[in-house]
Image (cartoon, rainbow, N blue to C red; front, side, top):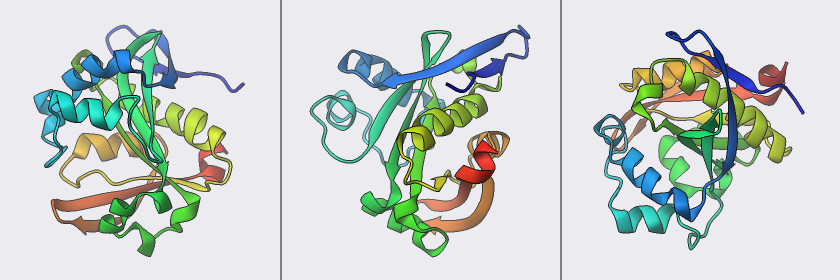
Length: 191
């Protein structure tokens, strides 16, 4: 097993371990709280974050190809991440990823640092890097790339991706605004 990714918190200076577990129904109140945080909601344009919608999208009754995970910092939930094969999720066509990537070899990711106290401390970059290494590439050997498409205006998100080892591939237009297509290759990422 590869070493755990560590977050070096600015104020504490102590390394802390990030791990992942599948999202469970007892995590739904936490997800609901995180998704309704004003700093998160501003980047989830038009997404229904009501309680019934959160249960439907993230609860055990959901169906579909998307995997949902809880990020744990030293065992405490600090964030959420999801992954999927880009070819299996039609909405990625709206980002025009297919122009820049072979979708069937690309794992799409989305993520959030849910706990406000963990933001702006390196947690997001460490969480993304650990997630791609330990979940996306480790569980899906068919994937050669991991990609994300945060809004171009969401500077913190795409900078976290850069710090995690992703590279800017393109700026693509979506119906809600310009997005930065960020990509990490399995070879570069693990090398």
